[in-house]
Image (cartoon, rainbow, N blue to C red; front, side, top):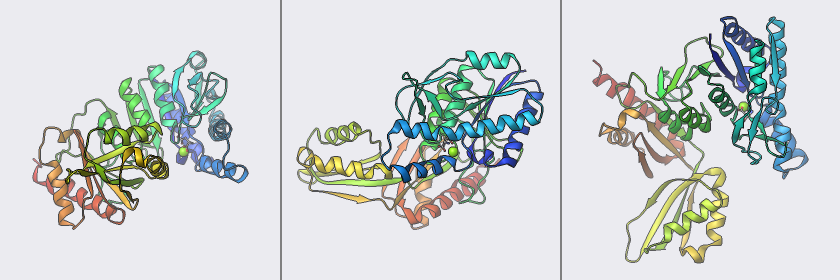
Length: 410
Ligand code: ASP
Ligand code: MG
């Protein structure tokens, strides 16, 4: 007997039938003798609908009141799920973030979990109750409800699994696990049995929408055994862990696409020390994350610096740079938001030269132009035109999972 944390995403609890299905999965786990803590997201598009409702009343509502509103979605799904479990005859109790002891900092709308006082949960588990906790929310030191950022229920689940020393944290969703590429884009993509925390973290950050990236960070830090699986198919999912047994023969585990990028280029900067510092400290002062960065070689006494930001940060980024035009010293800003980032991720590429070249070859053969490149030990990202991104994913997938994997097969 062990302790299992099961998290169900919005699509898994979207309506009464789906809630009944989730209640069945939970009670089956419970009846096998496990203690079960459940974390739920809001039903379907509830959170989006609540945001729309708020906009109708006040497009500039305070973040505190937004959290007060958005946190209700999870409360609904938790109460309904508890009711569905009651029908199945198992002891159950649903708790809000506050009741479950989830303490956060004060960052309304994007709060971080600081600690979880597990007393109440442990007392309920002692009574052999199934404990259902609202995901995505906590309580701050003012006694206010906070939310953890969109998709934050994954993080709630992993945090609970960490503090409760759970044997397993299962993240149930509407797909079978983590795939070699988005199966809607690449029909021959296949599910991975295992993936490392580092790969998953890169993928979560690079646009694969399987897991909230902070949840992966936390799982890695506290070594939480994670599994991503479908609440519908009953098939085994993808295990996320520190080290995996089988490496893909192609050295690449998965391919991700992110359309939420915009490229800015500052043209004709002075070629002297301190320019990059000025640009990027201004941006970080506005909490704008910069991703790919490219600096040209000097031409005479001039140079250019290009970089990418999330599309949602584009306006702010342009504004702060324009406001500091004299301080930075540039001729003009060139913007392109009609682009996408395509990335390959794989722990296996670390000691295998030629992986990046294979990706570039696939893109070259397809006539797809690369605007920018960035690499880390376990990923290569390229920036391409938005309307070529899907095709780029397909040709790169074919390269690594058909051609190369085929050559390397034993
Ligand atoms: N309901 C929240 C959202 O849609 C949190 C979550 O689903 O994880 O962002
Ligand atoms: Mg959701």
